[in-house]
Image 1 (cartoon, helix red, strand yellow):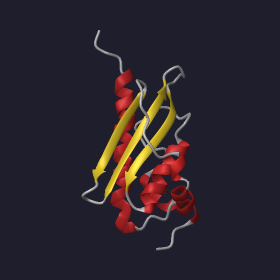
Image 2: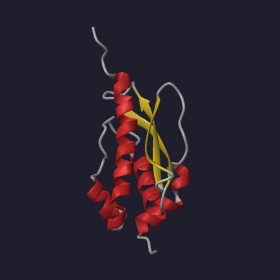
Image 3: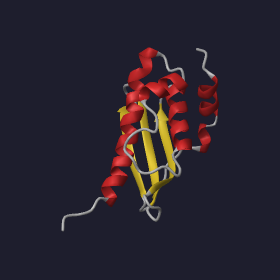
Length: 132
């Protein structure tokens, strides 16, 4: 299979954003299944002192094809400094076009989106105001 330039670059550079984050200000979300062939996990570290709270760092782990690893790596590289929002910084369609993800793999991009939403939702829930 031939990969476009962004897919090759972010797949090859994934080591800079791959891994786990731990600590009291780190939150995790995952989606998919290794048995099904695609699993993605995002760990997000939050800067609570920023107003609004922002992403300090975001790392990923993935059991996936080069397209999905590249997309996950790109998202992790784009994340620092962004506000904590449980929505991708770009639509699934935009990511599909940017990384030239074949149509049969579109469902795998939804797994990436679900993992992103799970991680950022966990961070948002940690800071949500409690009942008075």
